[in-house]
Length: 283
Image 1 (cartoon, rainbow, N blue to C red):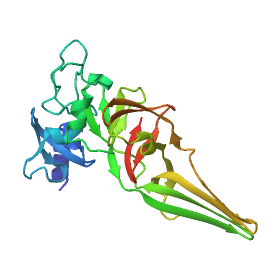
Image 2: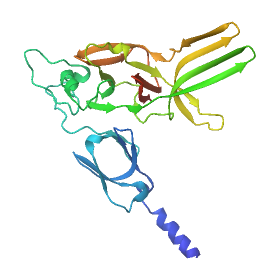
Image 3: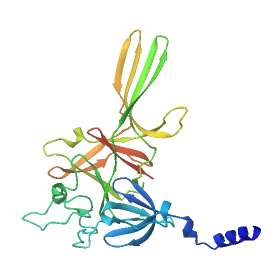
Image 4: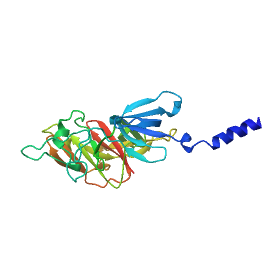
């Protein structure tokens, strides 16, 4: 029996370090796949699931993958096939997946990284009222973590006095979409022509609050309303201290660059548009 234990320990000692590590595939849908990558090509990724390494090989289209974090700790942003090649020395002449259009009588509208805003606005793969991030280094369009807010209210009561606060909540304390505090990214959004984007687009910084005393796990909260009351009456006010001021730069009909005017350092954030959260985090 002792000899068998020794043999098992000796065999495990000589196993490669990678046998105990894993790759993580981040999809644009926000899903994460713990996997062992077996092949990466220009069109697809092949992998085995970490919970079934003896099972079948799965295939995912490269265009559906945002990023891969390898077992050695390094990360790589996957660029969609068909990205327009640079036409000059300016890096990344267009968005990945949005081909540049030939110049007409006037130069096409351009924005961050020199992308063709008119082509982006007409591309049905990118939706109205949904913000996107441009990775300036690769020209990649990054989809933010999408979620539907839940309303949460807490109340404090005392003799002759009561107060309550409401917030919109997004489950989880951390977005899977991570941006660098050093910059290198821009935000764009499509809004139907004729509408003022400042009436629809809000950028907020999340507070992280415990779910309950029994459950200390934290969720992301956007403060909304605060109400106080006493024998003398009651009053309500909207909470805006977590709002980030924005500047809107029109790039083409219905296409806008969204520029935060206030600093956005390491924290969790979300665009709040038409009762939807589009979240990201900054490290």
